Length: 221
Image (cartoon, rainbow, N blue to C red; front, side, top):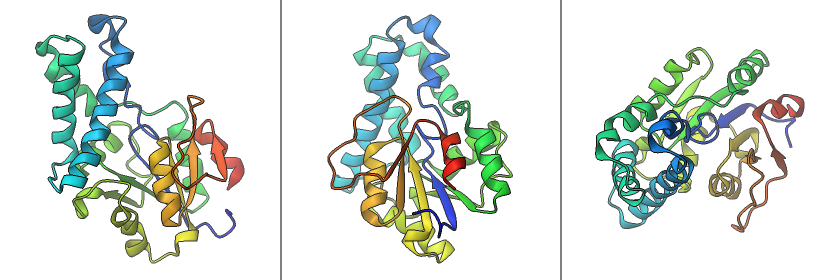
């Protein structure tokens, strides 16, 4: 599976960057419900990307993040004066603990490394910068190039068109099962990063490889 690999491409939100870290940094203010709130915010955010793709009513990822936060704060009765704080923290999400070292080791192996994400270019570049990952990635691909969200195949076309590699020469990693399925059905060698011992969805694709942490990738490639 991996012997022909030329590029390793990562989803951003939930895979490299911890989407719950914004709410976690406010848990003293939010209280015990912070994790439920964070999960609801993320689920609503994803639902809005899929619904807007189906309705052909595109908003960029930051606008969707704001809209989904508004609903989530109402659902969990969180004071609206926390809105700006939560949004500002979302712009500087933390990476998972193993991410930086793993990426640096992969860089030394001379693979092309890239991000393929729903996020806007501005958001992604800021996350990369604030986490000191500027010299890691060869490309950062945003769905804003095609104005439709993953798992639409036009998103997965982006690195193919840029790199001119075959689909089976690209390894794609995501913590999101629907994204793993989308990329796998498209033709990438798709790996599931299952940090939370979740159950994989039934979406006509099962990944050949499942890992618990990105550093496991080093022994695979």
